[in-house]
Length: 163
Image 1 (tube, rainbow, N blue to C red):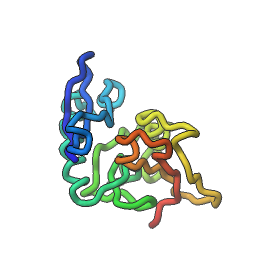
Image 2 (cartoon, rainbow, N blue to C red):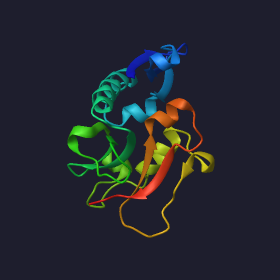
Image 3 (cartoon, helix red, strand yellow):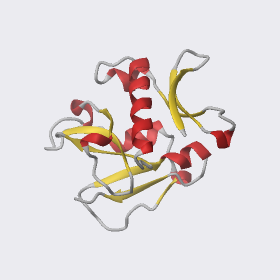
Image 4 (spheres, one colour):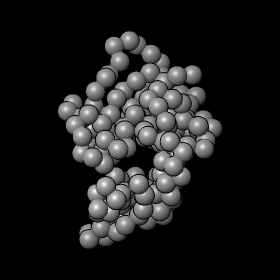
């Protein structure tokens, strides 16, 4: 499996995955539209290239899920090797704007990083499963990378994040 940044016919950069099992035909994972990339001052193309490189690195180390959490107090999108794992600095895909998505200390933003993942991967009732029945303070959405690329119906779960 290899991730790379390609420019689509409409000029939008996209992180795609290729694999011999798909005859190396690219499968889109993330389209980089201006509102998402502008948050930290990155162009969509720059964000596409950097995140594609980070996905290659993390996937080779066992990263199977894309989730969200906090790194150095800032909201972030990261990879993990299991559902419910906290984001760690070495797993960072990209940092979110804390004024929009809120900082770890509770200040800032009103938007949810979980909602960003919902929008990014078009998550809905048919492809999100396992919403926790118990209440917990640190709930996060985890998206299984391979499930998205294979077009499977159940690709995400919302679980309590371990400390």
